[in-house]
Length: 313
Image (tube, rainbow, N blue to C red):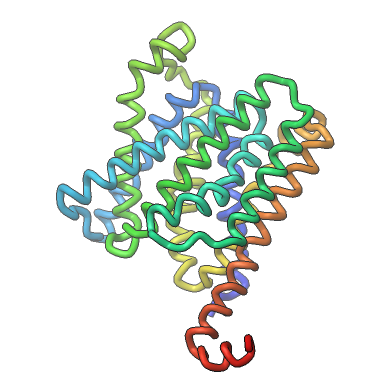
């Protein structure tokens, strides 16, 4: 039975997740180098936790390659995520990331062979309306580029989340994340040659971190990744999946509120942004409610098919 302490910790964890984009903007080294350091240290830290808890680690070569491959997707997701926050703003980045549910509604049926749910398509279209309102009078190149990168990041996040939903049924969560962080690090390193040739300033890597970068990086790795992840998994043992999913929708809200106070982003955002963002967040909040109602109706139909037929007649 969940206690008040559990709900308070859940909101704190989601606040940390919303704080991630802010830390990514505060750290001065480029997004690619940031992701390389974050994934390497996170993989090592989770490896230490696995060793301490004696959690099963080796799952066979095939599974290891699958997990490392998912890590490549995570690398792309985080690089685009942090780059979007810097190119545009934290608020624009987080609104772009809120489109992950749109991508999931279209992609999950292809991966899991589930039927497409009409209400998911409707909510996805609602998100598109919100994005259209944001873009309608937007002429600044950085804002358009930033939200485009955030939407692409959300697409990758949707794919690896769908893949992980199957893997987590068979493999310990910490083991999955350790492999995937290692894969994300490898994927980032393999991207270095292309990055330095076409994107890096001065065509060279930049790992020159100022003293405050180490503080922000430590918070990002140990608080927002290692702690927040393990706490989230632990809280799932007490709190229902529905409550978890509903509460996680607060991540962009918390992040945008923090960005307004820390970076004064309210002065940089148009009225159209708030209207479009409101529509997107509304669709995100409505989704778990509609999904819960649909699931209950489905269970009733399965339990009492005759009664349902009679009522329909």
